[in-house]
Length: 369
Image: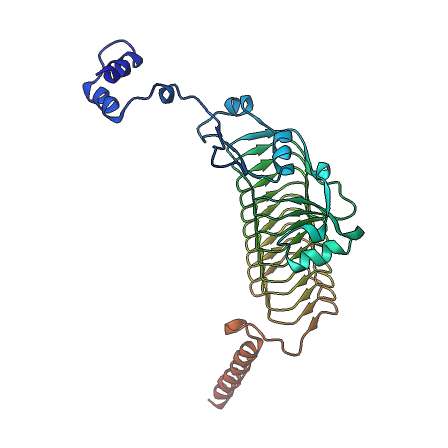
């Protein structure tokens, strides 16, 4: 009964309900847990290949600050070829990957052919490599992340998951090749998010992600399906000359400032249904290889589709344009199909013709009487 006595003492003076005391005793009272201490979980002896730092969601911000993970620790683990698994923690300091040693592309195993070809065409194929996987969830990153690479690429071989993580400063993954899937869903980028000339070999998810004052994906290539469903772009967003080789969804995405998809190519089905563009939206010289759905989307500023090329269905049904859109010199492929149902122009013309016939018959009957 020593556990019961300890429980009663911790609950203070006075009468303690016997039911509560018995419940504590029956469940086994553990003194360290009763203190509510916020302890850091680290990798065990059976996890030498992974750098682990986990904090319980119940930890306070002050407790997270007291046990903050240093970015230099993370970089050291990555340089040694280890994976990273951080959850619920605070990371302080800058993380720049220029410190990684440069290696030849042909020495990196299991690199997707497209990435190997692209990396091999740059400066003799010298790249910087992260083995991965990299998982940073429900955390706060208080430093900058960048590459500063002007030649060659940074190659991340394993999956990258940063769901629910807040990045307070600039995140720059320009000239980065992601060989595995990327999941940034519900992440928050308070500053710039830069993915200039990045390449994504597998599926990418930025669902319900909040982008800050500037997000750039200029000249990036997405080889797998992409989802920006319900993403919020609170600043300028640039998707200029981006290649989407498979399906891409921006359904219910919100664009607060100007955005540009000019010169981009959508190789799969594109979905912008119910998206909201508060300012200018540019799709000039954009190529839509397959169906493009903009139904029920809202354009409150300029919507410029001049010189765009639609090769499949271009569904603009129930779209709201607050400003007259620009569809100058738009091309439609010979195999182009029209949306079905009442949105099909042929059906609409047929309905109009029937109405005209019925109107004529009605007027003829009136005059006859």
